[in-house]
Length: 504
Image 1 (cartoon, rainbow, N blue to C red):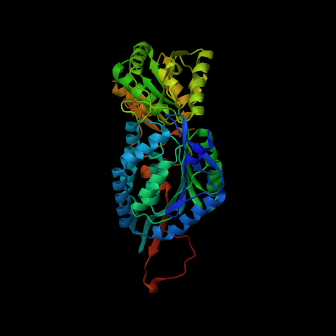
Image 2 (cartoon, rainbow, N blue to C red; image 1 turned 60 degrees about the horizontal axis):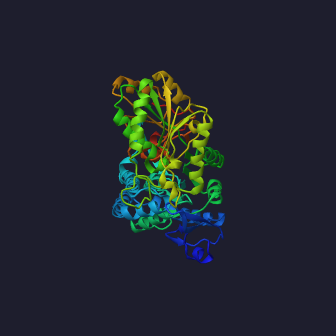
Image 3 (cartoon, one colour; image 1 turned 120 degrees about the horizontal axis):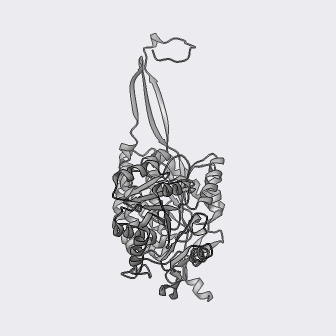
């Protein structure tokens, strides 16, 4: 590439103490335009010293922010909610340019993230403690929840707006100060959010952004002043984040990978199930941790269901996310697209049937990191296309004879993020939700992402930590409980008593 083109690219820097801070590390990465396959920016990679600078700013801001009245914090969150709402289009355009998802999908991401800001607006209610009068004679007991201090969030490329809002909304509302380490693949949205947070009146230092790679992550994990880490990403990294963070005395919630199954029973509405499978498998080019990547078809429902899915696949319009009418955009990088495509070769080699090969889609002839939608039939556990989290527009079909066989397969899978069942039988649905080992379950709903006033998280290898993300459990994660036992006695009744305290 000509040197002049490199010089012309903008650089995404850090946000520390309420302002843009240019990096002095001398290290950076390339931000690609997935729709054109060309670089569009550089992103600075923070040094350990620059991470320390962000932590110091957050630590300095914590006492004042923690002491800010709840009503004032709520007022600030209301202002932030309004600002993000008014800037939906601006945020969506930025994430489409760097991630590649369509404008409609990007706007949906912003809307779902905004729900978490709205939830945080109710922080005075959520931080109400409990009070027990006369727990013992003249003794009252009450519990309060207090913020942790400096906390950090490490977020993935697939939702550069929504996942940060999952984290910082509750963290800041609870009185913590926050450091965001976004994905280096699409970092610009983090800086837009920082500007809006400052405009909303959040004091300098309460919200900070450090761009970067493993150097920044490692420093956050080991820094003694960082009290908690939230992470969303692949399972191997989530496990490492959890183990390293907890070893360094931090509270950690680390959401890992997924292999989400959609169980279709013989009585299901075929058209509805096909609509759901196609929407959930190919939306955002399959780059969702809640994407349906496996349809488990029971009995003779498989053939008509596959036919209906293929009919719908033929109508999907794939192309640049900013072009009107496109329903699916490119993948995030060339390397990721190629890794996804490799699963089509391995599927054939291992005995599955590639019914629709996305590599043959005309869109792959365009510039950019495009791959058409793919469908693999006769998938079985043990095949790479089943065992791996492909994270791309590839849907596998597993054929089983019975509900029991399907349930056993889902529960045997090491992941337990989300799952869904499609049926007209309420009893079967009720039994499935009782039996299945997954953290989020959809009944005739293919992507059961909880609304903001519930909490998000899977089971098994999909979650490392004790509590789920955002919602009520998010409030729990970002605060710690303190129980106060008080007595205001008449001094004349006071005496020495070495016995263990009892209720009298």
